[in-house]
Image (tube, rainbow, N blue to C red; front, top):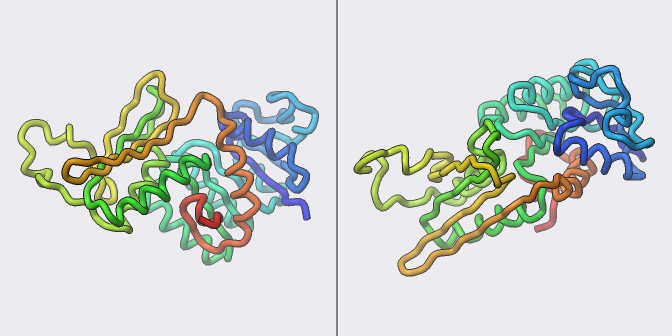
Length: 266
């Protein structure tokens, strides 16, 4: 069976690489793409490649007029939620690669997905090394009661923290709440330098040229520390294999699931 895919954000940095990956897969068919600036063209005219013959539409609503099995959301936070809900209303399963959605957004998305009996797989990062970092961090948090997270990204990334860090902090918060030797309200000086609190974890977001996406979790115990770090380079290729796996697996889910490891045997 060939899965029909609609890809929103198909001409973006990550979306364009994923579009090529879908086109190269024998069991997947890219039937529609969303990219407002290139609406009215064929995807191959923009990205190159004879197999990229999907039409580009200006909105998810227009693209969803073409029936699809899986809708892939790879746009921006201000449009992602509406796109996901529209896809669910049209009966599609959804894979989410867009960062910046809040926990409240995901509560609403989960409710609609369960009502429609569709699966939503939201991944802060499709890279397998990032997935492993989150799993290793969960293991460490069971034994080490104190940690902080550093979120690295390019200077132009507007959302902070990244989707990867949101996912990481949420998962660690379910293991336990990290202990603070000095409560934040007792900080002397600038309390803001202690970072923001997300699901109990202190998060420090760095936005500078030279970074693409990175996350570092530092665990501390008396006289010892453990550092887990994931770094991504300038290419979007590390995210393609994980995204293709998510596309193939999401139809076996009902409701919202967070993290690529939801469909991995780890």
